[in-house]
Length: 114
Image (cartoon, rainbow, N blue to C red):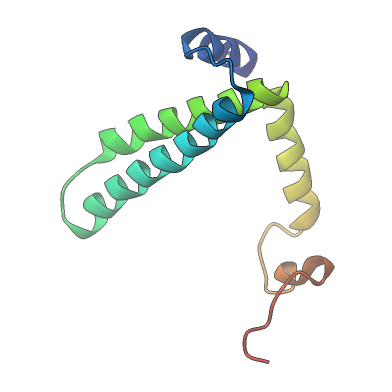
């Protein structure tokens, strides 16, 4: 299955919303909730010796579902969005690694030590 097919299948499995504000809020809060579940599984796996790798995998899928629904809401192609992100990152980190200089892009870095 490619990402376009995935987006369509996500849309077909989603609850229909009449209220557009409620719809996008549902998808955004869904990402946050599932991301919380994901990090909880990672924490339990690493800190509590409680193997939650199946939960990690499941929650990644759930986060992706909500992200696909956000893309559907705005009419964005998920695959194109991912390509744009890789293009941005390859320009930003052209030498293949992150340095503190990268954090200073466009004067957006805040130096808390000043």
